[in-house]
Length: 372
Image (cartoon, rainbow, N blue to C red; front, side, top):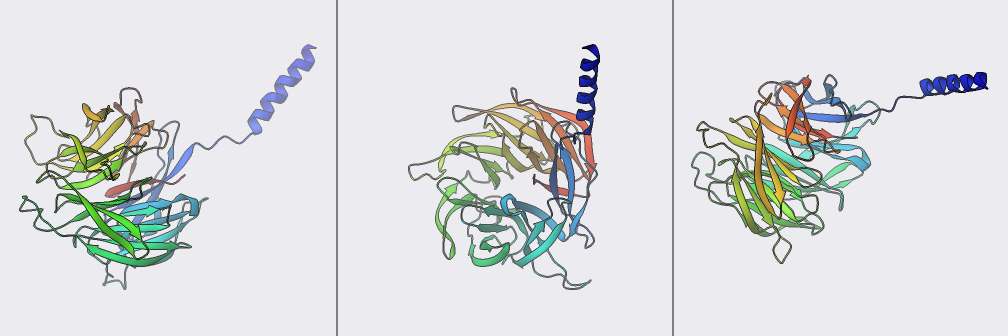
């Protein structure tokens, strides 16, 4: 009996050893602003259990790919940047689609089109109607496209108008981000120069302006995020380093302001400008990044109100972009000025962050996007 038991144990051990270890890594793409023809979108792997990051490597060369998004169901990545005509001449700003090799992470170009504006800084894909939108900061306009088998087909461009009280940054419109909300299907575009979020609906011709959300003067709305339950919109204001919370009006548009909180301590008197904002996957916390006062500000969300919790500053240097992994257990920061990506453990109860000893080196990282 003892011999049979021993043989069973040995067999179990051998069986366990022959089983392939579960891969807990996720592929992550890194947009950069290195202005180098030989560099571009990078990739690395993130371990969703330990928080470790692999060494980053080039996925595809493209000049200044400062923002990207992914259509996971069709394995396509979209990026804004510039493509070369020759070694000395650069084409107009473009939005490009790439086929993702799910095994290697490599990117293969599918199609490209002009962004019909200058200084593109944001791209969003709408899986509901296979549409894509681009925000052009320099020209202050937004462009719409439809996607057919990964091919980008242009629909229309809408020019923003307006200005604000900040004479250095708000002499005219500067579209800084664009994204859609569910289930209403409205498309919002934050305009830093006009102190507004333009509200669009999608039509066969592309985008149609239907309304706007007015922010306080001099706010400079840059990025925004929707709560997981779709009931709140948080707007990050770059120029005065504040965060504003909105709820829907009777038409389902986020026009009702709830509260606004600063991102800076009272003792900080130097220059700073806000960058990025994200709700936690459970909607209980809100995170926002600041450049100058290099930090991630943490807020608790309760009863449609924000309450400041803390700042995380360790290892953070010009955090233009950050992301929270799908599990909600980790937060990753793209530090543009220290050329690295740092990892933080997120306490799902308190919302607080703890820096982990993992990072990867990337020249001027500015956008982090998980694939799978």
